[in-house]
Length: 203
Image 1 (cartoon, rainbow, N blue to C red):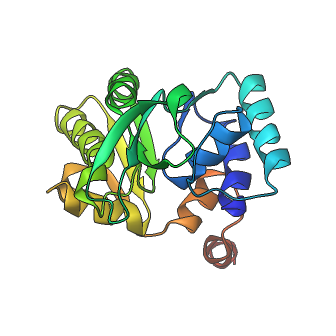
Image 2: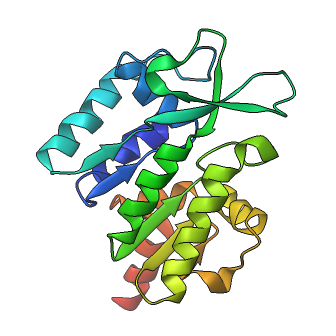
């Protein structure tokens, strides 16, 4: 996860909004002194998170963290409960965004002309925690079809989410199977394959 957080530093210099989802969100909530219960997070990344926030402020990029979340109430993840982030209990496991956050994200997307998507918003493999990923994916697809949004989707989890939402490649502007490479390219890192091709064209 620390590798992904590092890539966010460069992304905040290029985007107006950085919408967080998945396990990485837990680290940002914890960094903001929010109780995340028993949710998964990575230790030792506070300095990286500080750099992301600092760069975002400098670049006028708004980092969007959940206002509410869906948490698991049983070991098999078959049932979810919605909680405000300030009301998360010690035993809770965060596995998706809540309805208010879903509305906020949908409104942000509707106000943009271009969207870059990597990864899943929640643990969509479990139906109780699939709504965040699937509903936002449907919003993106709808706006793309209407010609209001250029949607660029990358990563294996993202492709699985497209399938889970009952959508297909044709419902988006561009699809990349690369995940980490996709983020590296967006962040401006040198891509070895591209570098070789560029050298070939120079000879």
